[in-house]
Length: 237
Image (cartoon, rainbow, N blue to C red; front, side, top):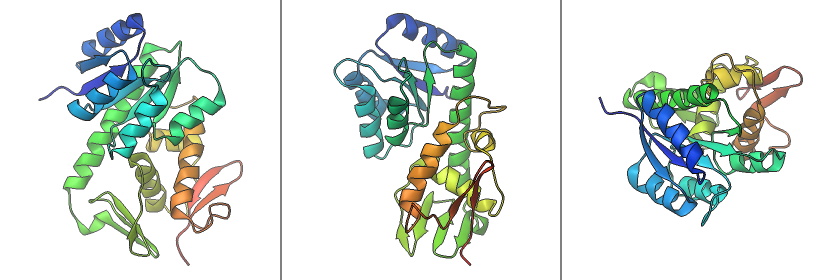
């Protein structure tokens, strides 16, 4: 069986060496780039299964790399590695299509858990897409989710969702009426078992999803917030 491939885009050689060693020890193949331009070329040309992306890179920064990857239509999971603690940088990374972030200095154990979870999620997505059955179609009135094709349609028109947005919408819609906390969504959609860390990635994903799904994101009709509890999906009446 082919080894899963992880692309490391990081300009600090000691961090690259640590990541390479631990990833290869877990059975992953690795690719390395020390600047954003080289990282982008490898991302587009080598089709890695996951990208570990530093934000502060020479030549082209991580924000530009992430945006270009998503603009090219690639759904490869992107895990941002950042030394920045500022809220704005983390949120911007997520807004540009990153799946999650981890802040330096990080725990190798935590990082490896996130790598495994994101690669496992993409494998599940690929497997589901190969199983074309009527159950793969969720008819929600004006919204229709085609799980096999990985497409959401509203009033007959395809919506441009990222893989994470698609996964989140599909999970909430398949469990319509049930409220899920941010921690539960991190565990069930992000696949982070026993997650107790930062849950802002959920809020960003929900906000972006509302911008694409709702008629008026400020007054959501489908993705509802239950203050102090979490989020739920509400079907058309």
